Structures are given as C-alpha cells and as structure tokens.
Image (cartoon, rainbow, N blue to C red; front, side, top):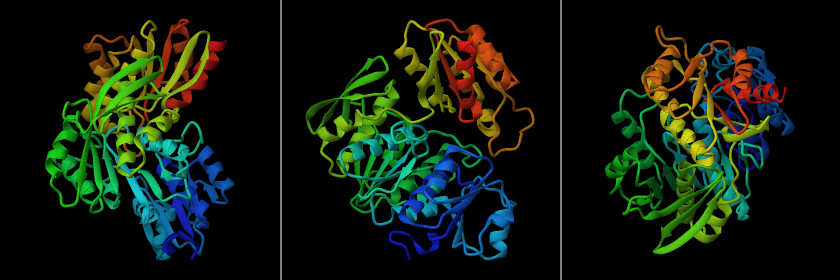
Length: 464
C-alpha cells in the first residue's frame, strides 16, 4: 500500500472527477501516489490539472471507462443511480465510496480544521490554507474553489494540519472528526434535503458532536442560527467553545472593521489585547470570515500575530468577487453568490468598494428548489443594484418544477422597486450589458451556474 493512502483508495475511479469537491480529493490522492482515474461530462481546467498529476481522465460517462483493477468508485450525491459507470461498478462488486468518506479517510491522523456554514465556507477554508502555508506549516487542504495564488483547490502538504471545507448540503460533513470545527452561520438552504430549521440544527449538531474530545468549536456570536446552535451544543463533554464576532460577549471580539477600497482593516480583541490586521478582499462578511480563520488557527496553537499577518496575504478565490477585467472604464466582477444572504452581502460589499459607481448585475438563479423557496428574497436582494438582468434558472442536478421560473425573482425585485429585465437567451447578455454600462460602472455576474462564462464575453463587447 502506498504511504498515506488507505487500501480502498489506492486505485480509485471518480465519477464526476472534474467537480470542485471531487477534483480536490483526486488531486490529493494523486499527489500521495495513488493510481487515480475518473470521468467527467466535459473538459475543464480541473481535468487537465489531474492529468498533469498522472491521473487518467475520460470525457463522457461509459461503463468501459471503469478499469478492471479499480479499488473503488468514488461518487458525490449528485451522481444518479443509472450512471453507466456506477451500474458497472455494482455489477463487478467494486466498492462505492461517497466523496465525504474518501475525504474523511485522507484527514485521518491529521490535526483537522473543518469549516462549515451556510455561507463563507470556501473563503474561510482558503484563508486558512493560504495563511498556514505562508507560515511554513505546509497544510493539506481541500476547498470548493480554486485559490487565486496557487490556482488550485487542493494540496497534499507535508505538515500535520488538514483544512477542509465541510459541506452540509447532503449531511456529508457529519463524517468528519476534526480537532477544530468552524460554524460561520446556520440558515435554511438545500431545500431538497432539509425540510425545516430543526433538521438543519440537528445536522449541524451532529457535525459538532464529531469534534474530537478536547477539540474546539469556533462559532459566530452574531448570526442568529449560529447563536442558537451554540446554545444547543454548549456543555458537550470535552468541547471547547470559542465565539467570535461583534457581540460584546464574543471570545474573539471584533472591535472595528474599516473599509479601505477593495480591502478592510480589522481590529479584534483577543486574550485582552488589541490586534489589527488587513483583509485583502472587500466586504464586512469577508472580514468576519478572516476573524473565524484567525480564531481557528489560534485554537491549534498558531501564534495570533503571525497568523493575522499571514491572513493579509490572501487575495481571494475564483468566483468570490473575482475581478475578471476592465474595459471601456467598466470593471467586470464575478460572484458565486446564489443564496439571498450571500447576494446581499456581495452587493453591499461592492457598494462599499465603489460608492460613486453604478452597480449592474447579471443574475442566474441556481436550482428550482432554491428558487421556489427563496425566489422572493433573491429578488429583494437585487434591489441593492442599480439595474439587473435575470437569466433562466440553472438546473444543475435538478429536474424542472412546474410553475417555478425566474419570474419569481423578477416579480419580487420589481415589487421591491428594482430595475430588472428578464433575459432568456444568455447569448444576448454581453451586448445588453455593453449597451447599459458607462465608464466607472461595476458589472457583477452572479450565481453558482454557468453565468460565470459571461464575464470575458462582456469584456469583449465593452472593448469593441
């Protein structure tokens, strides 16, 4: 067995290997020496990166892609039962492993930090990965997005720390046993899997219950759902609870957040002492994510001053308020925000970064189930923009729901006084934006689907 590789993962086959969560696990296994293979629906930079590490990546799904010597097949919750490679694996009695079990196996034996929450997981995990790496601690990490600096979502580090994004959407985060768990916020989302807030609290409570004895929960002292979770889990045997935020009773208290263009200066009170550091991405929510990262690193014994300085070197994750470029005096920025809370936070951050500019948004609702439940709130969030174009719903893994369309978002936006226009043909967006935008404006492409592809095309039209 190759060093650091569980026997079942020596020759893994990943179905959907190019996905954000799957590709990270595949990269770490390849870096550890596993014989990695898999398939994905289309070519991507992630597929090429895996090939560069020696992995075999097939495009398209077919039973013949599964090698006879595969030790397991790794799947996510998005893989359907009739996938031909999954069907073939069951015919051959090849073990099927959920990606969360594979990640848990890779984290085994490390000092793990698992980052959970309805919003902000990718950013906070990334901040920790960058900051700890900058201090020479060589952490392993698995993130749901590519870092701007290293340009990757995962690495197998030589150090003993493993930082992982912990996904609550399908309850898979309950598989991990971290030394430090971060809970940034707790809200109702993923409506196909959770019917109520009680189910959400129960799921997060199970996650917190897996923290190793003597470990630490770092949790927001400001967000209502996180405060309620803290009330429910405080007193758990062997669990240290560290709260952070602007609340007066927070253990790591935010004294002040000062916006400085596309950065922020943050002052916290930690251990009775004031500590000021820079966060090199805009917005209050990102500043609070940085404080959560600081508290988690300190819980692992990393000196606070060193960690705070290193957090300042973090410059972002692709699709998290990522500047795509500027043309004709117009900046085009890409946002992954798809839940109303995220949308409002990013729109407010952009307002704070450029108070005198107009803010134009191209928004693509993500999932029929989410739009059905939160379409009104999505529309209300768009009222923070000067004008918006709203695309059809990006279905991802879901089938259409009768009566659920982008009109739910558009009607709510108009009711909130927003200037909003429906665009059913995505190809029309670049020309439409170029016709609206004036020098000094900011254009924000927003959503978790393929709306991200429009940024370069908008810039091309602006240039012409």
